[in-house]
Image (cartoon, rainbow, N blue to C red; front, side, top):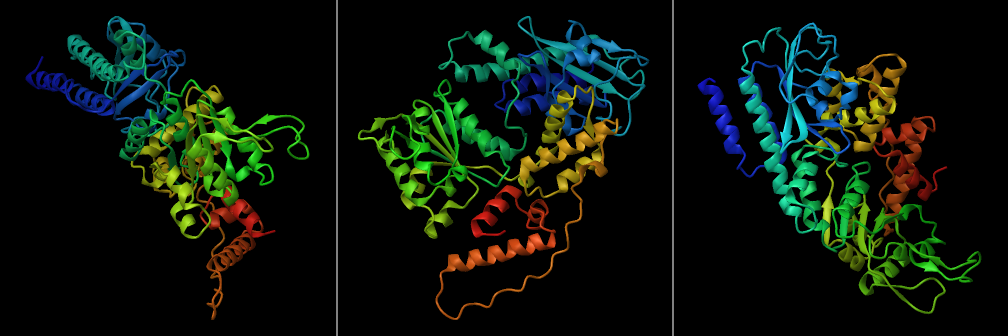
Length: 510
């Protein structure tokens, strides 16, 4: 073993005792492997509790790989590595398909027919928890690699998994009645997260969730449409002590005003026409658990007052009932509005806002999440691939660059729909690579014309009325420019179609 290899191995060993996030530990390990072994690409996988391989760090591969999940049975090379306790090397003329075809940064447009490939399985206390793979474009690149060196890196990789997961296990030991060793094995098999992303912005978001999840504080989630506010609410509930109780969801924007009070608080038989039986409201249904009120800014003022009373007193009174019911409910709310501005303009109660804003969580827009688009793209295409039972479906680097430069006014939801449509187009053509022509995000929106402004008023007028009048004229103008198509009008105004439609309906746009 050369001195340079020994230095790298020593640094990895020292890193094991360093307080780094697990993502940094994994990435430093794979970068070190690539530094001393003659490979063009490397990947570290963990084996989850469903028997699937999840990449946790890559080098020399497209960032989309981190969003994928690999089924070993569909990838014979990965399966062969998993089933061997010794390093496995594949002949250059091996007929087994390579799972990284089209995903190497140094060969993004090629099926890799001739190259060197090897890998080794990773064990923690005789439990299989993952694999390490190495790829080199040059045939014979691994001829002079000492198997002992590879096994040493494998041992350090397993130790990295072990130390990282042991720390997480110890953090949860007060809540779980399992041995540390079992926790180690289960958590090393990394579970597929719902909040996908590796950016510093997403890490801060996860940290905020972790800080407040196990309290009963009210949480106000804010962010643009499509950023994933409901996913954050679910994460808060799942990480709380109420996780074994129900989480009840209600969309305040979809509540018919005449039935909203009954939906929230319930009613007794005969309380109003059509009340043919007693009915529990959402607060009662969430008793002991969590109530998630989405689009809280749309709740009418008279219901805001009743909601405030329930939050303050912990009591619910059904419509038509004479007595109150005690409820124990954790409140999480979400909005894409600026509630401080809504309060200033009299559309939202200041006292309710302060009750809900105990712990605010802001979800950054996709355009501000550094490096997350490749991972999200891989994650989304992985779902498409599994849905259609495909062995491969990936995105061309030039296409990925276009995705990263696009502003994404609809955020993750818009990216998801764009890639699902593009994937479907590619599948229908019998291909497996998404290119620029498949995206459809460069479609021409009609050129904007200057909207003549209204003259400023010469006497006192309600500002809100004037603002709504201009909003109505702007929406009507956009629809006129887009031949009455709401989806195109939403692109024209750079906003979500659903939000635009609701706003237009509220303002009386036909």
